[in-house]
Image (cartoon, rainbow, N blue to C red; front, top):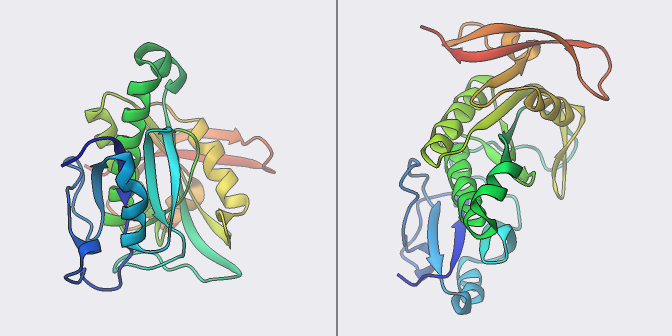
Amino acid sequence: MPTGQVLYLDRHLPAPPPARPDAIVLGRPSAAPPTGGTVCVYIDERDASRLAELIGPARLTGAGGSRHLMLAPAANGTARGEVAPPRGGRFLTTVLMTDIVESTATVARIGDRRWGELLAGHYADCCAVAAYAGGEIVDTTGDGIVAIFDGPTRAVAAAAAIQATARERGIGVRAGVHCGECERIPQGVAGVAVHIAARVCGLGEGDEVLTTGTVRDLAVGSTLAFEPRGVRTLRGVPGEWTLFRAVEAD
């Protein structure tokens, strides 16, 4: 297999891949479960444009450095088990926001090149985990992701799995989860719910999954337990919010 750039491919196919050149699986992330058309490959720069042609319309975006790229579909598609938000208008969803703990210190310690490799691998893990849990990554935030799910239990499970894969890479990840209405926009999703999830995430410690009371109320009867983390104000968001740490019940 050629080496060069790191590419993450997400095919979003409605059925198992057909016997075509663009459906050939070159490799999978070892730390993540298989997700149909999701692959992580290493490719020489000269082959990047050709590969993009083979898999169809897509956009090529940087993932932590010019030599580390993430390839994502240009149009919204829905693989089996994936969230299918409406094309327009508001819809109810669960928003997961993640963030790498002490990312600046980590970059300073290991250098830009190794950080780019680490971040590319982490993004590949996040994409695979989110798809496996029936979710969709709608945006990235420098060293974190924004993902949506059809329920809070799946979002919390995905957050825990992302944290587990991150620990294998030697990094800590905090996560925030909130349920609310969002609107679909070309760049992903928008709405107060996204900002609330971001504020909640920012208050967490490494390997913590913090949620709002809304998540706790909707997850009644699940296998999750919620440990109180006090009442907080969220910058820019009206009112006071009771926060909880979500864990698997004993």
